[in-house]
Image (cartoon, rainbow, N blue to C red; front, top):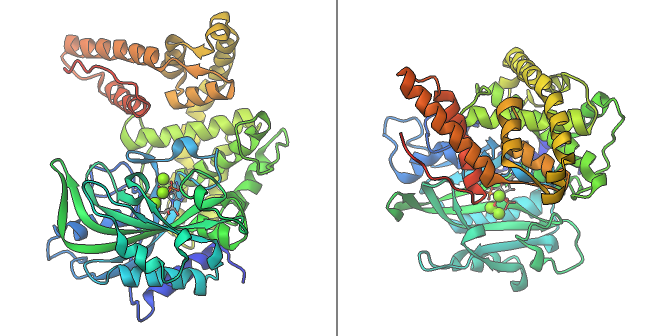
Length: 489
Ligand code: ATP
Ligand code: MG
Ligand code: MG
Ligand code: MG
């Protein structure tokens, strides 16, 4: 059968909404969570049902009586606990923006149904080859016992050597630092076949990818730790683009119809005729391919985020969006030879392709266009200067000797050229260099102290935005093991 993206999506929904499964179709929530300060972006379908899991939903809520639901949820994983931004473009199956097909039982059915239906849908409806599937289950640790229930359920369908115990890192799912969580069981698919792929499961190998995650939400994590919930729930999430790749016989999500129109649009923007050849890796020749993937991914993320009212700014999720845009614009202009304004010109392609499923894109098209144009233009002038400056830095004898971009130079890129530190770090990697992040951090500290003093001196808060910006960069550094001493106000 032929499996265009829209049919993959609708097949999932009709499977779960039809009897005997009878899930209620529920709309995707926006990519910016409505009422959840613990989340930067919606990172999974279950986010909007958080209080249904914890049992804290008021009975007056329209969701209160929901016992089963299914949808395709718009997700962004570019900040917080689930942050894939660094991998995006470099691999074939992590996006910043993606759609997650989800099904839920709110204290209703349990693991037996969840596992049985997952198998039936994948093998009998979608027609995946059973001999290519692997299941994982939580092996247990000091806090939570092994999920032998899932193991035994999979053994009805799969031989024992394809039912694999995995640790907390992969098989205990948590939405954030706090919130509902639980052991998960996952299905992985071998894109190659004819081999024992079990050693490659959960090993960052692009030929064996995780497609479906089934979480048994049975705990809540709060400041005090893990507490069992009064009721057990089922929460499943499957990457639409990954499933489409499998069904379309592709080894990369970017080779599916989810991205084809965007790739064509990017190709027509390239003045140098840079063409996509689908290679993956860090070698010199792959840089064009990485840039194609990143630009296409980032164009989708911008269009969807703007349609949901997120606006680029210097703080919080707005700054994440700004970083994604600058990353995309830099790849397009420098690596693909795209002309000024190319990123904005990609927006109609996204709107056109996805408005049937997500009408908010068409509705907000004018806004999406004008905000991207403005953002792109503001960065464009600095981009050219920044790239020139970066090239002089790369050629400096100190840089050549230390193989490192200094704190002062990376701070200048950030402070005067508008290059977020992750962008400079990435450009450094392309030049086979690193960035002296601790020294960059010291420069930030100095600026932070200075803006605090200025604030005190003026008895007003002119440094507010700068401080927020610093907080964002600080968390980026903290993720990479660089910490600053906070000399609080
Ligand atoms: P991975 O281990 O591949 O990073 P994950 O375990 O972090 O995936 P989950 O949190 O379990 O992902 O999300 C449920 C499903 O959503 C995954 O099984 C996968 O199919 C899909 N998915 C997760 N992250 C991404 C992403 N960045 N881009 C595209 N699909 C994704
Ligand atoms: Mg992940
Ligand atoms: Mg995983
Ligand atoms: Mg997972």
